[in-house]
Length: 114
Length: 116
Image 1 (cartoon, helix red, strand yellow):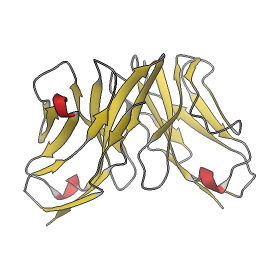
Image 2 (tube, chains in turn blue, yellow; image 1 turned 180 degrees about the vertical axis):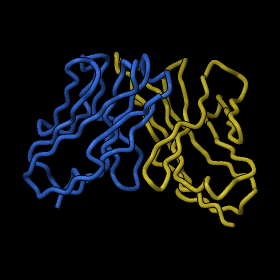
Image 3 (cartoon, one colour; image 1 turned 30 degrees about the vertical axis):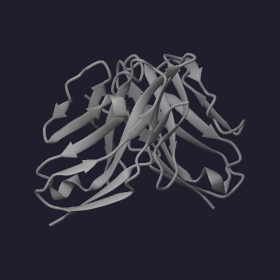
């Protein structure tokens, strides 16, 4: 069974540039999460979906961040006008029927904003 | 709001010994779920073991086991017969389900170093 796939693995930007991260969850997993992990911190939830619906996006930092999952499968997280404070690893995870069940993580995208 | 606290930032032990990592949590939920994950040097996060709060028996999985002390809101991870490849950062996490939000909240992690 294929795991959670993310791309790209790395991204380096100048402040003000935009970037998109892509995630393909495990087949059959209805719940998809985006986490931000700053250096030397634990993952922090940004947004999560059940199927195509956004269930909770209250932790998205600002209107510079957006996330979609239009067909309830793959998902894209986008940062408009990146700032140095956005430097972190962005992790996608999926599960079946919510976080009472195990989340499986992708390898992450390591973002550096210069 | 939920909180997960790991006070040990780094632990170093000799290979083949037993190590315990601490985690305490705060929640208002009567039923909750606790997890331990491992993050390797490559950044990969791997699920290790879980404890459902309504279960009295401590969970075990291979050379991982949990010390669940519900009255103390504590969920320690025990690794027996440690190996070099156990060197990693270990995260404790707790599922929160309040006001319709279903979140897994992580502690800050404990770095484990296994010395040969």
